[in-house]
Length: 226
Ligand SMILES: [Fe+2]
Image (cartoon, rainbow, N blue to C red):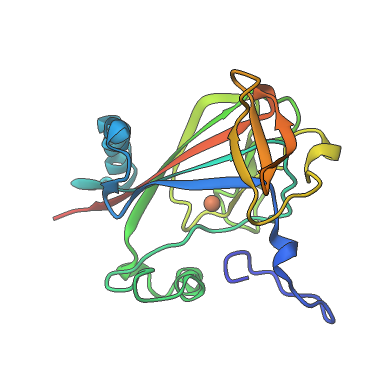
């Protein structure tokens, strides 16, 4: 709620099911450590460090986090959100995300907010939705879009301060596979070389052709100056 600034309509009781979507995420690097040594060259990519430094006109950049999202056809009711931020001495190690986000949106703690930049790349060949909407001039101004299909296309942004969202993608009637649950898994389809499939308790509930797979890779960098 702190992320999207939406309020709950009167009489509505929130349940976890309302937040269930067929998005699958994973962490590739955390707190400056790449969890998969075979992709350290991606995580410590020199052009990414350059892009983050030039975004902030900073002297130094440090690769901090890297994550991925993979999804097939998926609804997205997110009106727009801000990514979690950090402040000098206050981060997710010692404070909840709602507090950090509320501090960021208040604008009162900008001097202590870390200079963060994200390098985000998408790989999505689908023809229905799936773009990126962003509000570079603030949430009261008109948004801009990067429209799909997009393959190895990316942005450098400060998504802790710029509202943004992924757009729903894929055929509408396939965006919520029947049987989807919080323990559902995404895996390679053994019968299709470039296909994916979603399983619930070992049962395949959806096959996703490569054409409908939307992949996002998100690198987070921190900058500083002397
Ligand atoms: Fe985000």
